[in-house]
View 1: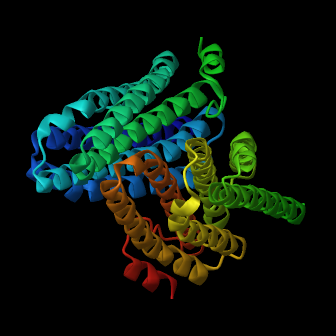
View 2 (view 1 turned 30 degrees about the vertical axis):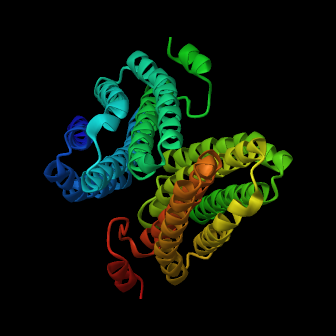
Length: 231
Length: 231
């Protein structure tokens, strides 16, 4: 009987993990589509991202409920409890990433309406690719509970921040040189900011993976300390 | 014996709630100080906000640990479990509000360095006051588990968003009229954005209070639906 219950419990945990991966895949798709919409001035794709955000939200609510149910019925401890708690946090970050993808999509719409040249979007294409890769790696690290990969991915956030600062400087210079570009540049700035935030949220997910495996909360420690915890 | 355990349990829950209120009070102080630093060009106060952020972070980590301990040892269900779960979420938002206060403080430092006129800061003083009030009301609603007050406070977020949009339009017009103001205006824009985010996080806390009392997740429902849930 105990074996049976424990098997059921493991199956439930696996199922919730799978749901998180489904939610992660959806959010990743939204980020990619939002970036593509921005690059190509594809308003239909941008609108799709915004319209589909409710799916991300309902997955958050449903996974959250499942986690509370599991805690109430299964009373997990140690590693199992850490898994449930890190899932509760992970889905909050995934939901926020979905929100940031919507912001990028809204900026794609605003830029299309301004009829502004696509030249500017190239400046943030690189950041878009980078954070999409970070998000995918964070989800992989979660799926495989791989702390080394989680650490490497978390470390990428510093690089994204540098890229973001570079783009910001470029855009501000551009605005000063040509004040007519202020309106479109502001939209590109908001999109870049949203992408930079996606990097932050992906880093958070990596930190939860390390917490899950190592039992140590590494949210507010230096990269060097995090490295020592992992290696 | 059971009474004794249950008394201990209640005492533990009360203690964690008190810790959340301490963390909330600290964060509120940081938001106020950051706004004051911005308004007065007070760099010492801005630096204090940034330096003291570690206190907010360690409270987050410590309250989070206490919550996991309570779940593992006390195996709470129903309302008690909801309380613990909403506390876990609340402290994430409080920590992020602390981060946003730091951003405002950093903008105060940047503006002081640019030696820019204080005239611009008035534009965001109103938003600063408004979100500080929202945060305090959200914490009050949490302390008194008052869903009606939580709803009223959550509804304020729409007003803050409107104020933010107004300030944004004003600043962009200002930049277009006088390109020399782009650099300082961008700092004011980031500060306004951080304040607007504090409104969002305060709204989140209100939604958790409603979840705690009503057992319904109202994070992604309309204000009208939320109202019906509460009244």
